[in-house]
Length: 140
Image (cartoon, rainbow, N blue to C red):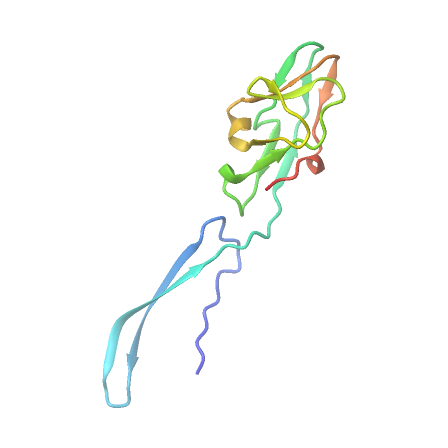
């Protein structure tokens, strides 16, 4: 006889899922054990890509604009938000992307928390529209 457990088909999110079931055992002589517990830990699989939506930010020449969680909307069902990192793959041709008031260079990262707490900004030298394409922002 084989007994198997089938984990949920739907995504369980970034945290392990603790599952348990109660069972009993009996033998042919009427002996019986009851209240036995079997524990299973379902480990999440990181198989879902991040979801990214971008909304352009406008700024006047010589000015700066915040890049916020409203202009770069990011989520990943398989990853806790504190573990998401945004990588600057290419700097704007004119101006800078700044983190905590300092320009960042290509390859540098910032967190979703920094984005949500208004630590990321775009400054321009000439009038420009800053719109990052989602394929320029690899995650994890």
